[in-house]
Image (cartoon, rainbow, N blue to C red; front, side, top):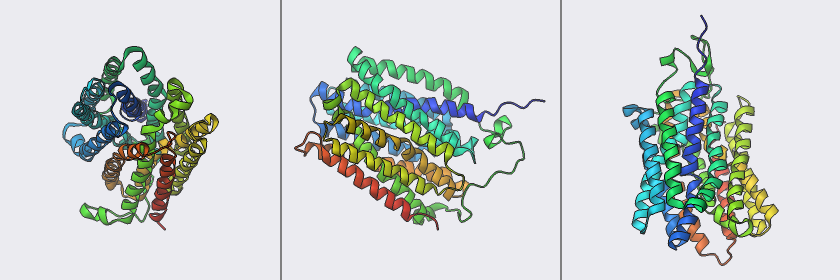
Length: 409
C-alpha cells in the first residue's frame, strides 16, 4: 500500500502565502501608509508615526493571547477573523478624516496582522517539523520577504492609480479570499490526524533530539528567572526595534534621491536580499551550530547597512542601494532565528510558550520604534536624518552583546 505524500510541505506552502499577505499588508504596508496619510491629511510625521506604533502595540496584546485563542477556537477560525480585521483596518487608514479615526483603524490592522505574522507561522509549521524545522521555517517565512517584494511597489502603484481607499479595499478583498480558503484546507490538521510524523519520517521512528541536553523544563514563573530566556527576548526586541524603526521611515528617506516608484522598488529589493539571507541560514546552517552566533552575524551585516546609509548622506545612490542590500539581508533572520534558537535551547514542551512570549515582548517594544524614530527625525535639521542610521547601528550592536551574553557554555 502506498503511503500518502508528506503533508508538511503543503502546510509550509500555505504558511508562505499567509506570511506574504500578513507582512505585505501589516509590515511593509505601514511605511507607505505613513507617507500617503501625511500627504493626504497634512498631519505631522510624529502623529502618523504614533499611529504606526499603535498598530504594532495592539498587535502585541493579541500575540500574548494567540496560544489561548488557538487552543479554544483553532488556528483556522483565528486566521479568518484576523484577516477580516486586517482588511477593515487598512481601509480605515485610507478613510480616516480625524486622528482618532486613524488610531481606531490601527487597532484593527495591528490586531489582525499578527494572526498572519511570526507567531502564527511558527504555530502552523512547527508541529510538522523537528530536525528540518530551520529549512521549513525559512521557506515559510520567505513569504514575508515576497510580501515586501510584491506589496511595496504594488501599494505605491495602486495608490497612485486608484487612490488609497480603492487600493486598500481591492487588496484587502483578495487577501480575505486567500486566507479563508487556506485556513479551511491546511491550518486545521495535525500530523497525528493524518497518520503522519514530523519531518515525514516513518511511523515509530525515533525523533532526533534538537534541544540542548542542558535544557530543563521551566514552568510558571521559572521562565522569567532564566537568563537564556531573558537574553533571547531582549536580543530579539532590540534587533526588531532598530529594524522596524528604520523601515518605518526608509521609504520616505529614499524618495528624495530615488523618486517614489524607485523607492518602492528599493524596498522590494531589500526583501529580495532578505530571501537570500534567510535561505542561506535555513538550508546551510549546520545542525550543531550555535544559533545565537549565526543570528549575531546577521545583525552585524545589518549594522554595515546602516553605516552605508549614513555615508550616503541621503544623496549617493550607489551607497543607498548598498545599504538597502546589506540591511535587507538580515531582515528575515531577525524574525526566523529566535524561534530556532528557542527550539535548540528549551525543552519541546516549553518552545511554543517561549516563542509566543518573545514575539509578543519584541512587538510591544518595537511598537514604539516608529514614533521614537519619528521624533528623532522631526528634531533633525538635516533631511537625510543621519541620526536614524546611527541609532540603528548602535541598537543592533547592543542586540549582539545581549545574545552573546546568553550563550550556553
